[in-house]
Image (cartoon, rainbow, N blue to C red; front, side, top):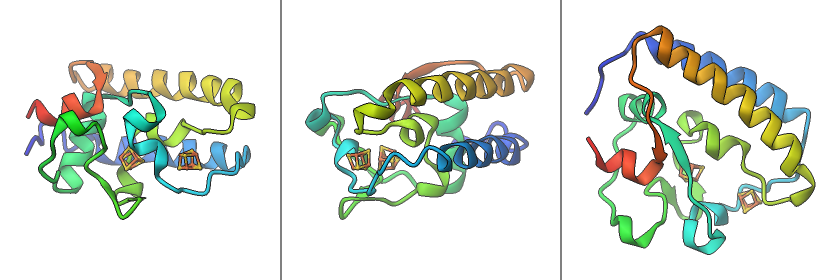
Length: 137
Ligand code: SF4
Ligand code: SF4
């Protein structure tokens, strides 16, 4: 369990809240089916920052998982089991191609906010595949 920076907990929460409010105005038609959390199926990689994976670890237990399967360990019965704590990358990914450009702009904005938070709190910035971050405890 990593808990180097408990003071960041509310700050990152605030950033996620703002992000959710902004995303709500987009309404890309995500039905939360969880398919995109099977990374091979979507042929994509979910990246996350250390400050975000620390936040997840602080709030939930990470189930043991096999990284070779390339499925998020928090996907349970095709649903995200940590929606309150999921990462920026989880939140801004939409399979609907019509939202790709808009989502990218929002992603860039909040990526910068999260990086600033890490910098301001002296948290080393590492942005790497989430499964790798979760294994590197
Ligand atoms: S973005 Fe698409 S694939 Fe992912 S949960 Fe939403 S509807 Fe399902
Ligand atoms: S944390 Fe949740 S939304 Fe993100 S990849 Fe895992 S199951 Fe999907």
